[in-house]
Length: 197
Image (cartoon, rainbow, N blue to C red; front, side, top):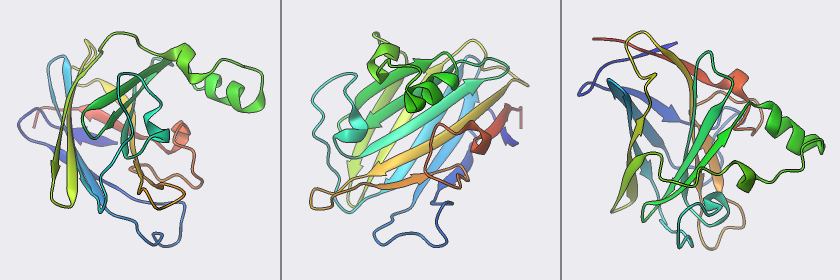
């Protein structure tokens, strides 16, 4: 369990490739800092990147298929429903809400034929901004939720698609210790508790 302090203090988690014995060639590090205010989770990601790009043009596109993407998975406990928020360079955003992880299992085994678009959040649900610098890009996001309060616990995971135009597949990384690449596997997600430090 990670104790997350109130803003302006932060706690940091690193993106890695726990499913591999060593990081793959081309892996670039990233760090995610977390803090909270009453009713708001504050997320700041700093992502080292050799070739920052996305083909995204608008809101709620499949960003993970279009280039560089930072992903946020958030589940207030004891709720089963969880959020999946994506941010791409240029501050393009994708927002999804799944009623439980059974939906993903159903999509994979064919018992739930609904596409991800069936779970889109149509109106802007969080605030974000991106900044592109030399060799890195950053995401700052503020996620409002009435359950962000002292002592409340959430499950969370952050992940990344580091895409390069000449490379066939994006390099994936996560803050969770996944044994295989499955960002929806909540057994590997960490737990945070909002603390006053």
